[in-house]
Figure (cartoon, each protein chain N blue to C red):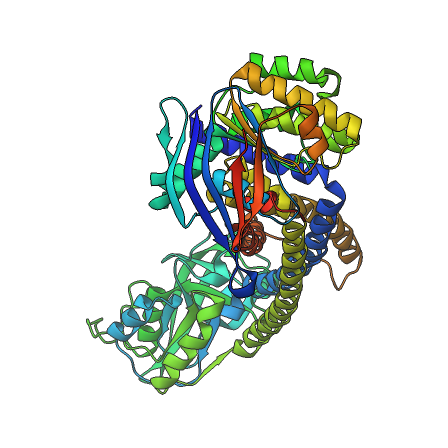
Length: 407
Length: 232
């Protein structure tokens, strides 16, 4: 061990022995710190728990991410692509008509469903996120009510039928299609089918009088390559926090929207309010803690003036004195943090049991992430260091000659 | 071993002004000199100046050791780090109230100056001094558990533990009853002689100094303050 390390160890050891010798006073200082740390950890844990719970509830329902366009226009594919490129857009698929397209679904004459909503979908659709099934050209995802009324389940086949009138003649297009999956009832309440957006385009073109190989109708206008134009888009934000920005961006394009922005803003307001309350309480507590610890610590140094003077006389440099003071403050802060953490853990356990017992509060829990705990530790050590610096300034004024003078 | 010529210090301002003079002091290894004089004449000031804790106004010569290290030059250039090093290495201080650290045992108090100087905590000299002073049974006790006499003996061993060239003691027997004071004085003089150190011991107890027929550095009042004269 180098001389410097040896000396450092000696000084830290001296600081420890001093603290232990005056353990009653040390304990008072530690206790005053614990009295601040433990309630603050609990308060912050609860705030974080409540807000996390609310945000998780928001995130669990993809409808909260939805931005429904109310204004219809005629947009080109480039518009849709630009929309998809936006960072705040999680999912966007074009809708050809302003109203949802409709089609009949049936397995036989008895299991027949008229005019089921056809909703365009694609890979990444948030509504289908927990299904892992994506509608392909010959498969679709049914809403729960549609599946129930048709009495089909995932993997079974059915027929899709569309009617059109051309030159006063009724024509019917048909497509055999497979059920790729069935949505949970909560996801979509009406009978609906989520189909590949290309298929929807095909259905619309058929209705406009074009011939369609897919639907088995060869009469009509030959299918050309006219570019698709979109009336609207099914649009989902990439995150709860960007819904607002997305809504504003669309408003700038003169597109009116409907979204759950109000609910999101409620949660954010609660988060902000709780954050503000917490910060005010924390600041007050911190100021009090700083003042009380600084007072106790500096009084302690004043009381031990002669000891510091003797240490200086025996050859301890100012850096050594600083180390001695800082070591004492940090050790007490560390001890206070460990005790505070223990108290927090115990009370959080009790709280969580009580919260879990009630239906309304189920899911709400006091919780802190390791990063937050690390930040709390850093803050505690920061307070200790600040107090120690005040102490060091005080201790630096003590001259070795003071040990010779009578007290 | 110790040689001081024409040391002059003033403290305070205006009517509080007090000058302390030491025209000449030379001590050989093993010599102990008592500094005597009335309260407030400047004995502690003299000790602080010789302990490099106070910058003098005038100092012709100040050397310590064989061959002597020029401390006057260090004081003149105010080389703080070197002065602190000389103080920690070559000087031993024995304080009026002992100045022991309450949280350390007798053993740790004694070994502290050695450990701060990077030396091994124990030495033959310490074992010998502790045995002579009857501290062996007290090594694990804290200062609070000791009598005043025991504390002063511990303070003496701590002052010489790092083998300094000079011991500066400030009224070490002030708090002791005459018998205990006399015993400590006897032990100090014999150990200083035995170990070949030099020592300055401030004492207002003329009787004690006379009993041991110690050489004296006597305070003489001057118009400005006080002059210390080697009355050997």
